[in-house]
Image: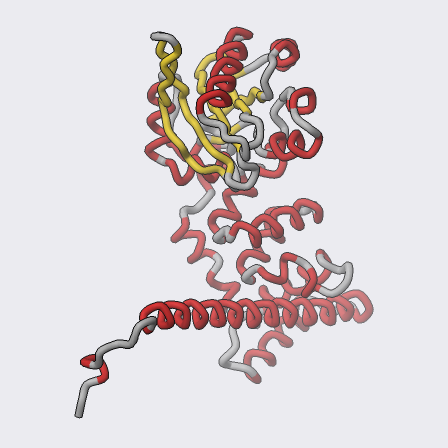
Length: 343
């Protein structure tokens, strides 16, 4: 009997096999998402009914525990019917009570993500924002936790800039959303005063975390990018390209307090990138100066005289209070701590 692997493969077989593998993977992913959404809908509906009974019949913790025990006895193969988890379901239903849950981004998240949103955020608009971002960018539970603890929503788009004066309205809004203040570099593990070259090196050593902190859409181009201008040498600290906005971002690092001359230097670097690297299909180059500290009044005066679009932000190593940072678990401990939500 001839082994099928000894056959001479016809033209196009490998391409078709690759296409079919991708199709199977895509179908499996869609199926898993569908199952997850159905589970979230189930938990939400249970939460609605239990919440109604709590309100109208005064159900207490004893009744909820009995309900959880009865559900687990009837469906021993299903996870998630602990008394504590049933209580989470009621909190979930009360938080998202404005219509069909399947239409909400949160319905596309795993249940562990939902409990993080409920535990760490009290404001519903913030819950919706983080849920939407987690879905769009595929955040793990650990990344979601860190984004919340580092106040990503509050920092996004908050850096003082002159974008409105130098970019058309839509571009100005996009660039502003990419500029945080302050940038949180606590993942570098640095403390005390460091030299600019050491900060830059640390950011490169942790490039994955650096790109995450910069925000969605950023791609790293280079560090100490060299330009020769008539025999004069200039070096850009960090150069990024935003793949959605189709624009370069020039990032300059200063460990000290902002000085007006820093804006002039960044202005020149932006002009260089526009002249040497930017293509016709690219949007205007933007600059971000990240410094150790700043006086916002001085920053705004300096930006008002700049001829290129730029923002000025500060950075911190310690975005989290010490007590909160000490309590924040790493990925393995976080997964273990939340395992009961899956049981």
